[in-house]
Structures are given as C-alpha cells and as structure tokens.
Length: 142
Image 1 (cartoon, rainbow, N blue to C red):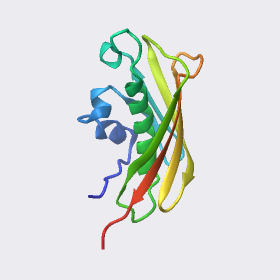
Image 2: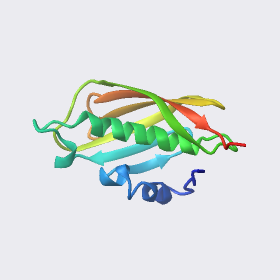
Image 3: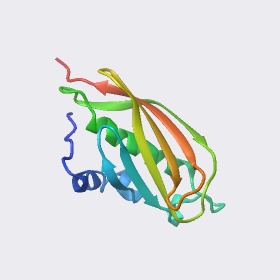
C-alpha cells in the first residue's frame, strides 16, 4: 500500500484525524522533510491516575512528528516506512498546558531514516523529553 502524501498543512492535519493523532488532539504547525512541529493541549485523557502526563502520550506525539517527516522525505519510488526502533529519555513532566514537539532528521538514506525530536512545554521551560527513532524505508514488491 502506497502512502498518499498530503500537499498542504491542512492536509497533514486532516490525515490523522480519524486515527491516533486525531484521537489525542495533535496539531501540526509545520510538516516538511527537514522539520516537523506538532503540539498537543494536555487534557485528562493524556494523564495517568496520579495526574501527571502519560509517557505514552509524549512518545506518540514525538513518533507522529517523526513519522510525518519520514513520509514527507521518502525517496522517489518508496511506498512507505515502518518504525524499527525508538528511544525516549524523559527529563520532566507536566500536569496541564500544552506541549510542543520539534522533529528533525539526523539521517535520510535509501533504506533508513533516523529522526530526533525534542518535546517541550509550549510556554517554555525545561525539555520534557528527547526522542530518537529509526525508520525503515519500504519499497514496492516486484
């Protein structure tokens, strides 16, 4: 199955509406092969029982930003990608407000892409998390 790459920012925001990004309320301010900027307003469903931001919500935002960048930067002829590895270091947390993720490629090759992302409070302050993932580029079968 080939991925249909959105051509506008509105298209990128609409692409995930019925999927996890939409369910979690992710918004994207920039999507390109060189940088993706996304955000999420913290709501009760993003929290764990102790009232802190769920690590999975942070990882989902970072992974989605990196994935959108991977799609935007697919080599000509590639049919898609899949994540083969990811790692996150959590530095702090929040209970409310908005978080912002900036993702940039570290490596874009014919068979793999490596992306780094940083998640911060949108209002400023210390980083919440540093994220890195490796994407395997998929090619059509002959």
